[in-house]
Image (cartoon, rainbow, N blue to C red):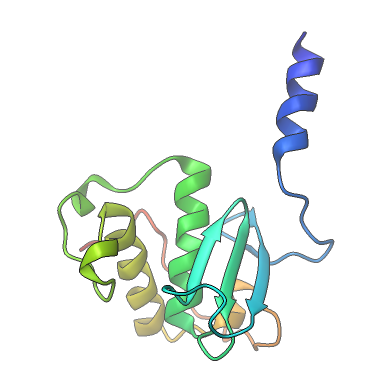
Length: 138
């Protein structure tokens, strides 16, 4: 019975490419997609995959979306973000999850990180200190 459950659960997970980026001990697929394909947003994260439209890949955006992967894997968002304002999300998309991801994105920019520090392909890593999602505050 346990084996069947493991097979069912593992078959639901998205397979990751062999050289997937890893941050905070979590691997994910990084995809740059054509501009306009994610409208009204310019980036989304889910099922271990981050998709960012061409022209929108930057430190803030990559850190924000990878934070959503972290939130999904840990089923967590720091309590301090409940009711916190978002940094740049439109009002219709603002929630504790988005406020937390916005704050991590801003912290990564302040730390001098690049998309490469989060494993984004085609970007050099700076060896910055990547912010810990549990240590970022609103």
